[in-house]
Image 1: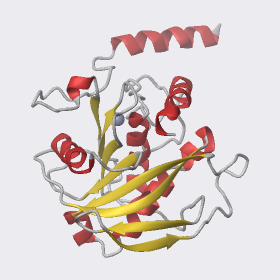
Image 2: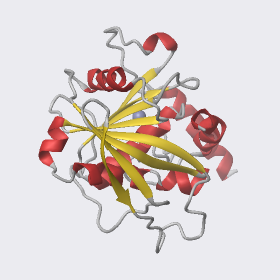
Image 3: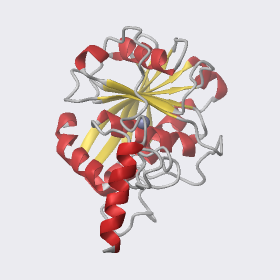
Image 4: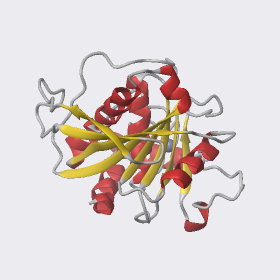
Length: 266
Ligand SMILES: [Zn+2]
């Protein structure tokens, strides 16, 4: 009986909350992606501002990551050794069978701020993929890192700028990292209704490697077609703004959707 009333309460509150479908941008300044039914979803910044990861991140397989130059040519490689010891998720498989190639790029402001920008953006992606490995057998592999010169007057413009510059790239995901002052969100991504034509795009603000990883996994989820849970609903899921930075689970419906849509990135 108790369960039942809780169920109805959730249903009711979900239908009463304005903007329950998310904070999709309605600026209408002609995003090329909007025509295809692709939503743009922006995540607010965390309350605690800046936080770096403490300790090593898990790298599921040793990876030789290409370092690309401004023109997209390979300028060198960096090796990130496999490191899956003392896994936080020891009760479950920590290495996903489905490897998803990622091009991680950092804008000029990010690269100016951090000499070790390449390592930082690989760390962010590797930390962000923990939940995907644990729950969906998906392992993000940063096959290349590259510089990017971001431009735009807000987060949405900057996402468009990333997509325009890297649309032809042979990677499943292009993950942008920014320290551009015009980027007012914690992260932003395209929420695809169907498999995208090229790579899936997201941009995450520099908020320290830990907070950026939390934002990035939320953005990567949008790339799998996952939408927001309504704020105030009490639904514990990283797609609920109330919990985006404080839990490490998806709700049941989102888990099902990621399982269904992960075939997009095979
Ligand atoms: Zn979002």
